[in-house]
Image (cartoon, rainbow, N blue to C red):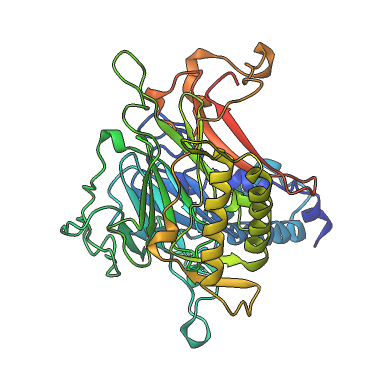
Length: 460
């Protein structure tokens, strides 16, 4: 690379990218959406592909194309600049070069609601768009490779070296198959003329956006399950503590599993503030112990619950992981059996022994599904009796309790209280002392210990 180009600040092209026309529109530059939430998760990355939600629309641009446009111009400028060239003129031209990079609008029939969050699955083929009461899944267009297979899900047009300079850079409509979760009611396509966009004709097109989510079933979080064989299992958490697991490749209308975290009685009653679920997390596909199959759910009051095992019906499991778990729980059974005793009236069994025996039975049944054990990884289809998790555990006791941060550790400016609101919490429902987000973090100590971190809206 030329010396002059190398001296440019590494992130200068990113600063110029902020002025790209892809960011024009509903709530993107202002930093807040229609619900008053800060824009934090309304962008998603897939490699060098950047997806942005603006209103009810998803836009896409390739970051590598933006950087390449910047570098090409700088290389040309360094080679041709004269002694009286002004810096302001150079920066202005840089801006024009980056702003000219083409971008795309995803034509999705299922999107007619304001999008608060975007999440891409591990394979980069599916993108979930989350609204206040709706969840839509988009099948991202892919570049066909040999034998018609996908080579990574990028748009071929964005990687062309030549761009039609006569065409206004207002975004190009791209057909995108889509589906709305939780409804089977058909509806007429979203009204736009063919001159302005093309309608998608894939599965899920034309589905009604009037989904069966009530006010108490507001969507607060979503999560792609890391142990899905098809990378198509999506977990949806609702404010009333209901967790739904969808296999979007098979059925977007009916969840594969539905679990209620807490009953109406335990969620609060007359004279008490109603607890609401606000966030959830899981371990990764390589987490130690039960964490990779455990779902941790957080409420706004800071209570933490867990559900285990939470597995999709079609899942991929490591044989070594299953065998290690079985060895551990069998040791627990032997240890706790010493605490079991019989009286003339009953047999007392410690709760820990009950749990260990249930876990050993479940693991044994799962291992029997593939008796050959010819591979280190098992591709299983679990029967209904093995996919429903046990009753929710919790709330857990924190010792010591979370301590408020000192006044100097955070900005307590009440004029912008919503700036500290987590991405999963509706601004109108958030109190500064409310919990807003939970994350599972892998330990770097090498001991296989996982950490669950809880964030609060303001002072914890």
